[in-house]
Image (tube, rainbow, N blue to C red; front, side, top):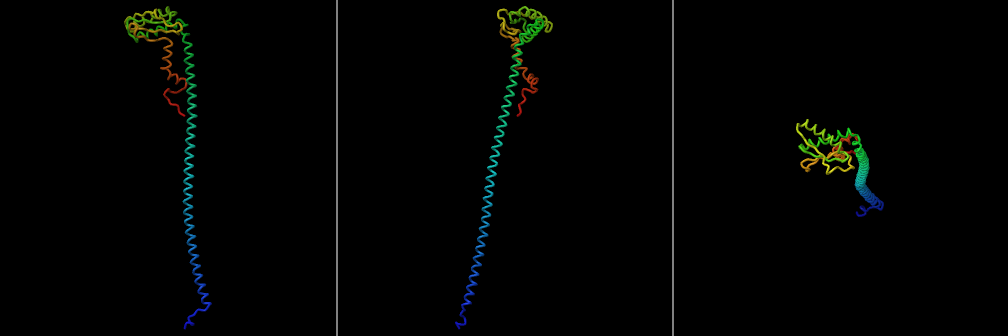
Length: 230
């Protein structure tokens, strides 16, 4: 009976072969499964690393781009400011030269006696209208006293015709203007407490301030308040 069920060597070898094939197949399938899982994890990790590196590169590029842009802006601003300062300096030099030349020509006005007398009359009248007093004095250069007296006579006459009242104007010979003055007068009222400086030097100084916007427009074609654009 036992002999009937006994396996021959060939049958045992066959069974072993089947078991070996089965184990090998399971091992191959397991190995394949492990390889697939490993490949999947590798792909995920690779993708993650690629994304991280890409993000790092993008961040570095963005930072460098911002730095380059900032550097470019600073350079452009610096160049623009230097250009602006050079332009402003050149314009100021031109204005200074203009007023300097005007100052040197002030004394030429007094050389034309007829014209100078008319100018003095108007300067005296301007002071008289502003002070609106019955008695005034004027300060002038000693060399101008004769022509100032004529201008005073004209001013008094015109003042009376314009405002219908008298004004007495005299020269304050105790305190003449400096001989190196370009000319003009100082009109004094209220017993010497108030004066209106109508000397040529003072009028030019006021012109530098009050007429400067108009001069800028004439010379440079722009308003004083206009901002310089880069």
